Length: 283
Image 1 (cartoon, rainbow, N blue to C red):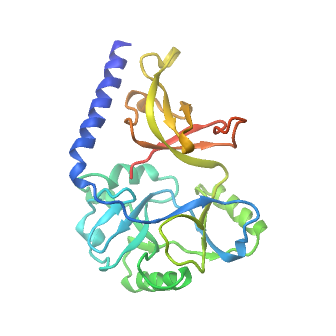
Image 2: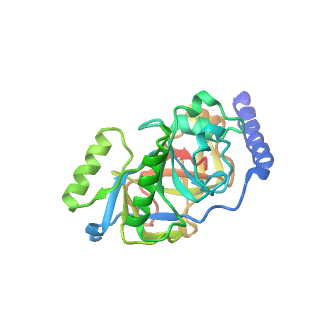
């Protein structure tokens, strides 16, 4: 038990040290479009749909690759050599079910070439290109086809014909190991912030919360992390314990970090029902 408590305390110190040494790598976060959750009743004929890739969102500012939070990504020179002097947005992706490959590779200060060979930059928008999404998508797909680099692609979007077809496509993506669907309003200009211009649709609900404390475990988790105390939207707080691995209980996400969790509806008090930890947000 004493050993586990020591490991837990040591891991927190390690996280604090990592944050301190990474300060020089943080830039201003890029201003990006953020998704709302899909709701019934939305006119889906005004949207194009695409698969929601399970990777790390990345922003190319014309010279550097960054995460959504503004952290610099040290990609190999060959990976970014073909990218133009213009802003581009996409997902660093290693295929369905391989988020761990991206997570273990993308934020290394010294890029491992062999690991980066497993990753593709799947582009989905051009933030400063004029026109609505249809026009930006046309420019983007034409550029990707011209540059013809094996590690650079674009996320294909198709018309959403009906709600029935939308949910059929969602089931197919889910059965094949995909995460869900994204819907983009095709006549929308690029406007940073959260709006209904971009929607996400999954079989389950998910959201993010900030870690603000810890609760020590009991029973087989005695001396380890039992659950995370997190703060959700509107200041609501709850404990998140289900879904944590043993390694995460020994080396938990640091205070102030953002975690993603899944849930199924809300309780009578407005808290997420059956909340379970999904991952520590690395970007």
